[in-house]
Length: 148
Image 1 (cartoon, rainbow, N blue to C red):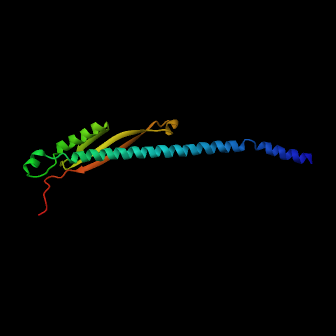
Image 2: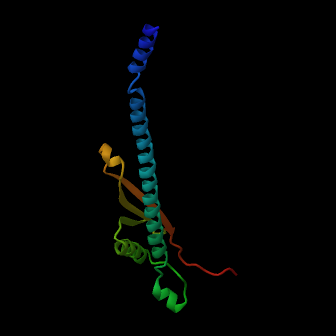
Image 3: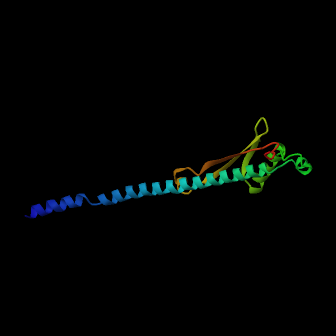
């Protein structure tokens, strides 16, 4: 009878530490998933902010009307050069890296914003930051008139 007990006790001793290995592997996997969720969400928020800054810069560009035509009442037109300068000025005021470019015909302004998101958990894996980019465009209307 004692041999049965010592065999059972021997089998129990063989399993010692088995749960610790499982717990360690599971903990590392869960921390990796949490880290990806936090850093992925952070990158999404940074991208949304870049898009918002680009949209506001494009909005500022769309408000750069030609003052000479507006004052004389001949029409409300957007000055393409002033629109591009207004977008660049908005980006400079916000401290954001980006560019504003006009289409070849001068009717559309495209704003592109570049930034980085400093990672929290992925820095452990050697990924210190992720690049983010925001885009927006504004159609610059020329010669807006009232319906007849």
